[in-house]
Image (cartoon, rainbow, N blue to C red; front, top):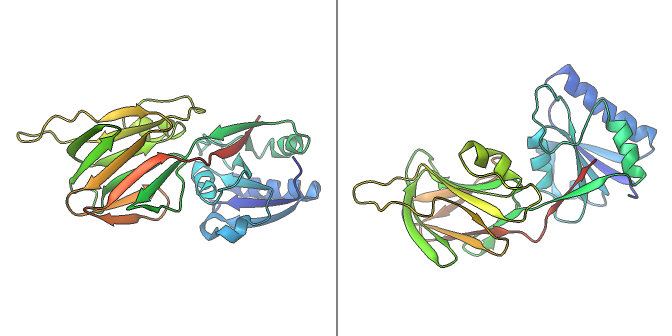
Length: 263
């Protein structure tokens, strides 16, 4: 890979190990004479990514996900776990101890690319800015209130009451979806999954059939609230996109995957 200009995204360090990792990344880039900018994850914007060849997310999976929300091109991303003892690092391929070695491997072309499927969402025909690498979550604005809606998948449609709906990618099936009781998919799969949280089936409510399922790449999932206001959020860290009853929500696989560097 011909790298001339790199963007380093970091999370606020909360331990000495995390501070050391950020310093090690900066030192290695300087040693390799790579031009780079360092931006806190909370200050990212579209301009941060202009004319960059590579994005390096230093922190945990949250920093990786946050960085991914701004990547819509074929730009590659490398995750660096800033503190492996305390951060899961599902998406992270390097750490402080091996970053310099692995970065040199990237410069030599000795690396692999993992193409990660992402989801896109529309609210009444308007596209939501963020692509979800893990999942979209849909619920009432006040999550403790029951959501009343219809859910439609291909030719099936059902009215439901629940706490909300998780719609995840293959990568996301190893995160919240898994914790909520969903199925895990191979990380390189382009299928996606939905799961209804705490579906309510009472005396006058039919038993829900569309509770959890795996959908194909070309499928789409449609949801419309019948009462109250709702929110849609990407990866549990984007801004909350609000909608009202009667508006149509559509979620499907995006044609813009994320290209993650692995070894």
